[in-house]
Length: 75
Image (tube, rainbow, N blue to C red; front, side, top):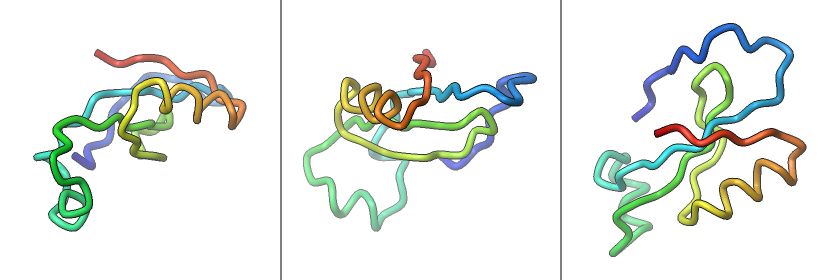
């Protein structure tokens, strides 16, 4: 869940990565706020740090673009 991802040498880029997160893998305090939600979308920076967690994939991309970041989907 809080694992760092090595995305290579991306210093000086404004790329963020959007990936699907199974709600069951999140901490209890977050899961308690999400009854009935099975999937969330995380926005990660190039160091793998989670910047945001949202319920809708389109919202994740929109959030990134509104903050002048370039979102890329991670499979």
